[in-house]
Length: 116
Picture 1 (tube, rainbow, N blue to C red):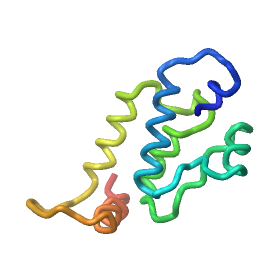
Picture 2: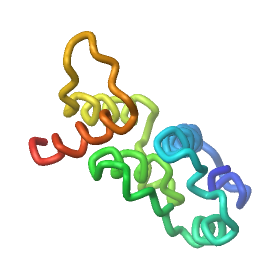
Picture 3: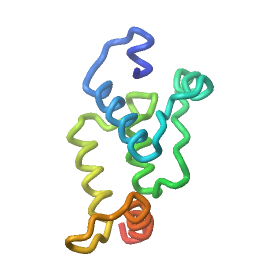
């Protein structure tokens, strides 16, 4: 749940961006970015989640921005998040007809990080 929601503040589209960011973090790491008590408390203080080092930096930045506890730091809309995800995905060099494993895909994103 987004920090502003927990604190009873007015909500806007960024609360959904937060949810999508947390879902993306789970997709890439297999764990919720705010699963531990320490991470939840840090989020309430406005400190963003620590993401798995296995996530390529470009993807990690997109996920961290989407799951930021401060709504001002998040993407303003789901469209902005989608476009950032698309830019990150386009950096991957995947051969036609080959479905990469998770490790191959993450490695390709990491390798392409320098070309963005």
